[in-house]
Image (cartoon, rainbow, N blue to C red; front, side, top):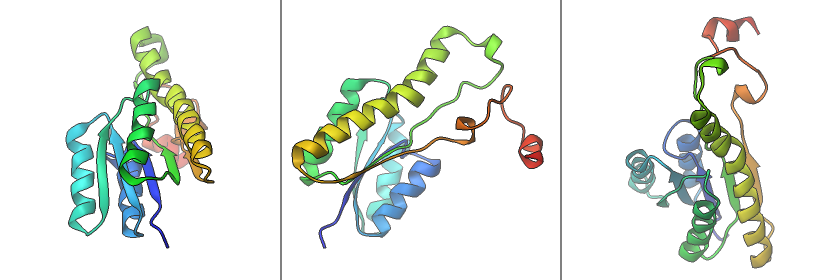
Length: 159
């Protein structure tokens, strides 16, 4: 069986890193992408130290051209594209009334536009290549709840 190629945004830590490690452990070739270069490269190092195959591509998913370049780099490197996991997400924290518009636009850019850019770029490339791939989009609990400021742990326990 040919190894699948998986592109994972937000792969520098948390769910993204765990997903990168999981795909690599199953024999997939992984494209780790994040804006945090040091931590993204750490994810690649963990994968390769365990015999996996991975590259790092620094990407700001809030920029459509970055996402297009990411998808093209994955195909240029591995010759195919099977899985795209739109996982990158950020949060400004604090009360909405205290936020500035720059932080608001950055959060919307990453959390909403970044997912849309990933779907469009990956979908177009998969169609161009003639393969049926999988596009996965994820959100944190904040995708379902509208918390006031940062969601306290005690409130999570009450749900």
